[in-house]
Amino acid sequence: MADPFYTHLACHTVGLGVSIGVGGALTGFVLHRLRLINDSPEKSGPVSAGKMIGAAERFLIYLIVVFGQPQLLAALLGIKTLVRYPEVKASRDADGADTGPQRHFAEYYLVGTLVSVCFGVTIPLVAEGVWRHALLPAL
Image (cartoon, rainbow, N blue to C red; front, side):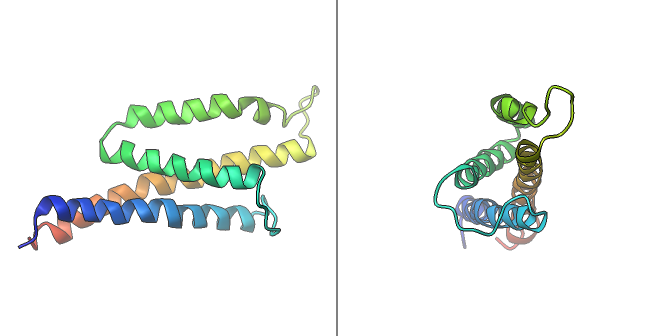
């Protein structure tokens, strides 16, 4: 008979891997489909930094959801917005009109964050549901 603790730990380990790996691929796919990032392989710069930030973000979101601390999710998103605010604000010129490359960054940031957060919140809930309703009764 398997120990429920280790089964629960294994379930969330798989969930965390899916959240980080598949979440990054899904976010990249959506950004490509909306043409917010190009198809050229970049080794450094904002796109690769965004991938690392997204992975760290989904990791933290996973832990926040698993430990049931939604106020920390609000704090995480608030801090991320404060850090990126100057770049998003620069997406409008003095007249309030959208400008080309900066508007592109604002859309990239907003869509990427939305997809990443939605996926990051959904996967730990699914992993917990699988453990509680499929694996736990079998133990």
